[in-house]
Image 1 (cartoon, rainbow, N blue to C red):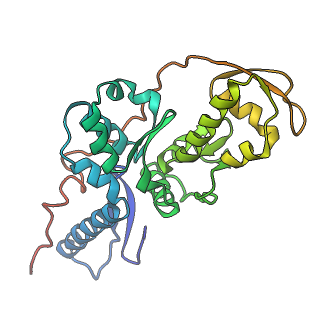
Image 2 (cartoon, rainbow, N blue to C red; image 1 turned 90 degrees about the vertical axis):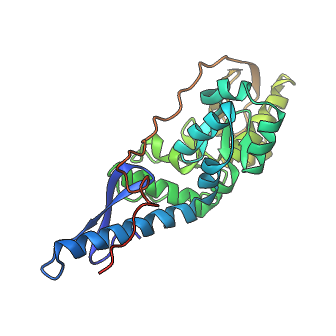
Length: 270
């Protein structure tokens, strides 16, 4: 969907507002080229909204105060944030706020906050594609986003995985729902003292048992014992207090962006 014989998408004013560039041609007058650009800009805006419907529904929801601020940050990040980046807003939410957010598909996890409807493989791949387009990168090829995690490709910036909906843990990009399950199991095991990482725990996050020590450490836990071998015995200590994370800097829509003026654009009539 990024290009046709007469037009292509390019970096626009924001990740949700790619620019449409109509190819120069002797067959197209300047007026006709502009009409084509406006028509395609409106179509692209509708297509983005269709594919990321939950994000736009959250944007339009009647929310106030901390809930509105939370949704703003969440949607600017394309649907997934580290919980540490929005702790202040979360602390201000009341029961009714949480209920309304839950109805929109917002999940308030211990590790991350995310829009659950945007975790389908198609939506995650599309989010990565939008990020790549907005930053002048080649269209990414993600491993199966339905799997709990995947190894990060050194050729792809970490921010691309985050825009797609993953959270980074060590050298793996982890789905936020899988990360929540994994973190919950680690918390329970850490209370027991020494334990041998099991294939079941590794399966929760989709890695080998030998990788678990590094991933548990990446969660902020102190680990004693050897990490060598396929099934090392680990003694997991208390979790270190991590400094608050900053949310990704949003690529703001401007007043002149195609997305901001989507409803104002209409194809000029002959």
